[in-house]
Image (cartoon, rainbow, N blue to C red; front, side, top):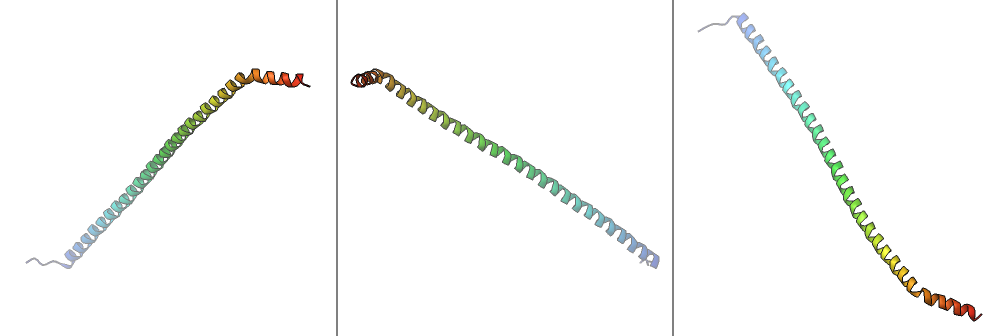
Length: 108
C-alpha cells in the first residue's frame, strides 16, 4: 500500500479544487450561452409574431377595403340606374308637362 504524504494530499486537494473551479466556470459559461440563445430566440419569435401580425392586419384591411369598394360600386350602379329611370320618366312625360303648362298659362 502506498502511503500518501501530506504534500501529496494537499496537491490532490488543490488539483480537485482547480478541476471543480474549471467545471463551475464551464457551467456558468454554458448557462450564460443558454440564456443568451433563449433571449435571441425570444426576440426572433417576437419579431416574427409582430411581422405576422402586421401582415394579417394588412390582409384584413385589404379585404375590408375590397369589400367596401364592391359595396360602393353596387350603390353607384343602383344610383345610376335610378337616375336613368327618372330621366326616362321625365323625358316620357315632358310633352304632357309642356301641354299642362301651356293650358295653365292660356287659362289665365
